[in-house]
Image (tube, rainbow, N blue to C red):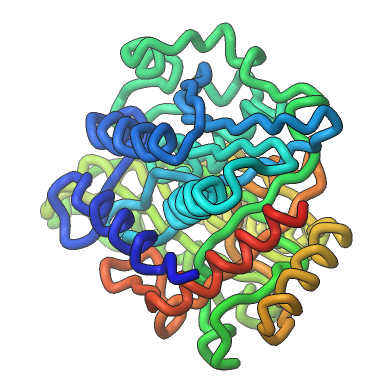
Amino acid sequence: MNIGKEILDKLNVLSKISEPSEGVTRLYLTKEYLEARNTIENWMKEAGLTTKIDGVGNLIGEYRSNNPKAKTLVMGSHQDSVEDGGKFDGILGVILPIVCIKNLLKKYKELSCNIKIISFAYEEGTTYGAACLTSKAIAGTFKESLLELEYKGKKLNHVMKEYGFDPQKIDECKFKKEDIDTFLEVHIEQGPVLEYENLSVGIVTAIQSCNRYLVNIKGQAGHSGTIPMKMRKDAGAVMAEIIYKSTKLTEELGEMVLTFGKISVVPGAVNVIPGEAEFTIDIRAMKNQILTNTMEKIENIIKEVTESKKMTYSIKMTNEIMETACSPTVIETLEKSFMRQNIPIFKLPSGAGHDAQEMANIAEMGMLFVRCIDGISHNPIEDVREKDLDIAGNVIMDYIYNF
C-alpha cells in the first residue's frame, strides 16, 4: 500500500506550525504546541481513534478491539522540536502510526489488538533542560524536582499552571499494567548508517545513556582595559579552558560523545570581563559506567581550572537516562514483518535518546529507524524520502496487523 505520500503531506502541514525560523521551532507549552496538538488530534479522530489530553499535555489516541483477550500496543513519539530543527524528528513517529491505523481500519474494519498512539508533548529538553519530561510522567519516573527547572526566568510548574495543568497530579498520568503491553517508536535515524548501507529502515538494538549537567562558574567582573591578564578572575576564559580540556579528554578516551551546547556569560558586555559563566554538558555513551567515569574526570578538570584561578563553581545534573536495550521479543517480531515485506533485516544501536527509553520501564520496548538523507537531523535541511516512508509504513501496518 502506498501511504508514504499521505504521511509526508501531513508532516509538511505540521512543519508550518512553528515560531519564525528557517526550520521548525515548536516548543513545549507555547501556542505552537497547542496548534500542533489540535491538528494531530483531528487526524486521530479522522482515523477512528478516541482522544484525550493527559495531565502534562500528552495527546493520546486510542482504538479498542472487540477481542476480549486483546493486548495493547502503544506507539508514538514527540511533537516538540529543537530550535530551528527539522520537520521529521519525533513527529514522524506520531503521524506514521496514525496513517497506518487509518488505512488498516479502512481495509479490515477491525483489529485484534488495542492501540494507543501518543504524541508526547516534550522530549527534546530544549527549554527546561531535562529530556523526555512527559514520557517520564507516563512511565512513572517523573521526579518532583523537575518542576523547579526554569526557562526564561519561569519555573516549569508555573508555566504548566498557565496552560491548565496541575503539577500536583502528574502521578495520575502513569500508565497502569493493563494500559500497555508493548511500546514501539518509529523515528528517523538521525545518523548516516542506513544511508551508508542504502537501506530504508533498520531495527534498533539499544539506546545509549545520556546525562546532562548545568555548570556555573563565578569569577569577578571588571573593566576590560584596566585589569592585567594575570590578575583577572575571568569566568569566560575559565569556561573556555574547561571546554577545551574536556573535549581533548573525551577525544582521547573515545567511546562517548560530549557537547557543550549552551553557553553564556554575565554581564555579556564587550568591555566587561565576565564575572559569571554558565554552560551545559551533554555526555552520551553506550555504557553508563563509561559515561560516569568520564564525567568524574571532567569534574576534576572543572575543579582544577577554577581553583587555580581562585574561582568557584557548581554543577547540577538536569537529566539522567541509562542505556536501554530493546526487547528481544519486539526485535524478533519486527524481523518477521521485515521478512513478510521482503526487506533486508538490518540492526543498529541508537546514539540519540528517545521517549522509548522511559517507556521501557513499563513495557516491552522496540524502535524502528527510518533513513534520513545524509544522516542530517536537528537541522532545517533534515529530510526523508517518500519511498522510505512508504516502506516504513508498510512494515508498521504488518506489525500492527500481526501483533
